[in-house]
Length: 191
Image (cartoon, rainbow, N blue to C red; front, side, top):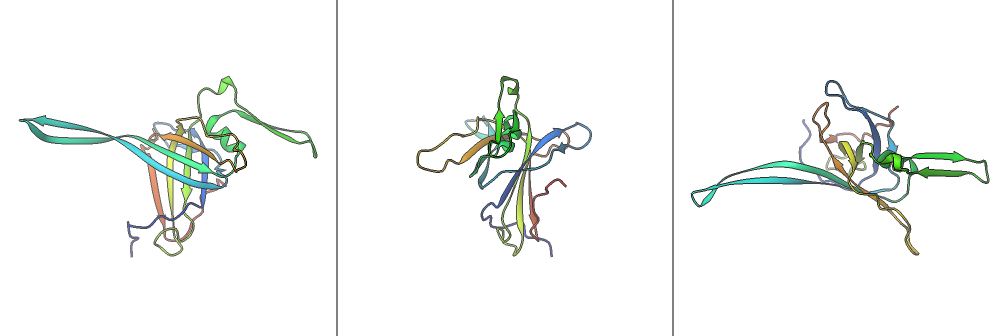
């Protein structure tokens, strides 16, 4: 029996970012190794529509709408230097030996053009109506639309968040994909 196209969506268990390496007009997009978004809390997808209305004879005659924008807002509990490098660019450098090791991430003026990336999130098993199943949301080509929410909070945990604009792939035209699995399937780790 085919899967029902109707389901609940409960929680988010995992989210990964993969740098977009190529998106040729003829061929398939290629991605770098997936990077875990640590402590994923929310992945909210929204869009904008433009509607044109045709009026005449003192009344509405027709209307047409077109999707003009898709965006995603992500909140996660822990800072990841690898995620920052994937969405903002920059470089990280490890130095020293125990007990004086450091890990430094630098964003420089050379990083003014932000890198594109794929974003994929998944429900936990049973996060959909199918017992043992899951749903993956995939945004194939994203880039930051605002600087990430970083920093500290007085006497509290500071969560990290970012907002990205999605674009359709040049190679396939895909913008968003939802994949409902009958059996829980982890996000591909690239290996």
